[in-house]
Length: 305
Image 1 (cartoon, one colour):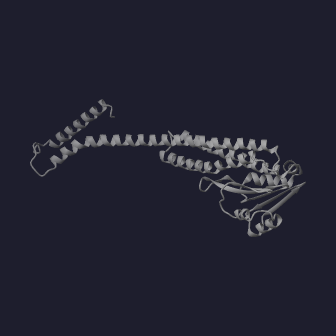
Image 2 (image 1 turned 45 degrees about the vertical axis):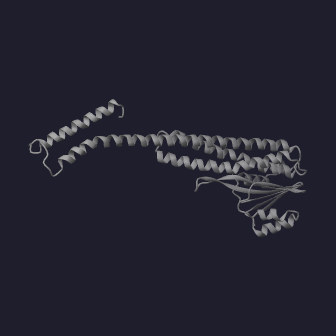
Image 3 (image 1 turned 60 degrees about the horizontal axis):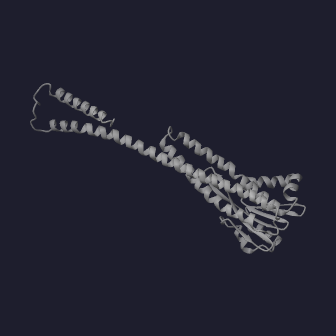
């Protein structure tokens, strides 16, 4: 079992990582008033962010991004929280570093337990969400750095590589948008709705978290617009380069057309004027060369080359 319990004053923090059926049974025994459907949600692989209000406790499901290095995309990591008078229960997969760091501090440092658990469970609940939201910004800074890197290599790098990087960045931004957007409504609800086990003075603190998560959402939207602009620019550059190649190939094709006609005429198995001349090969080759020069001069005069 991966259940850890920290008690300080009148507050108890129960943290469960990778919950098993035995963990859920013990949790149900310790808190028999928890709704069975909420306990069932703890084993669901992906649960939509939500808030379930009850008379004596609050059940909150939130998601925060975790970078998947292998797939190169941010994926959601879920944290389920029960908060009531004097207790907080957190259930997650153990991959959320801010939550693990806060748990470590409360386990090993008395002053940190007093800071985060000395007032109420609502204060500890706020600290958990605040740290998780703050962790969004290092992730967004990496996204911004990647966008700037793409922007710098857009005109000088290999176009195939640039297009691949733009596609990867766009997919990651879409994933971040899908993760962060629902959290805004959750935190807005925590700020506005009065609950007896979350003290009124915490409304200001939850308002600060709401400002942060809205800022994170706005940054993601800005990055989405930038990456779309870079994608449009890369498409324009790719089209321009294709057109340049097609233009050069067309010029060569047009030049070769009369030369192929002349060569075909003299290659027919029928009498052709001048074929008996000893210098006919050189005369024909010289004529073809002059035709090529005249056509190149014509193309340059029309600024096609």
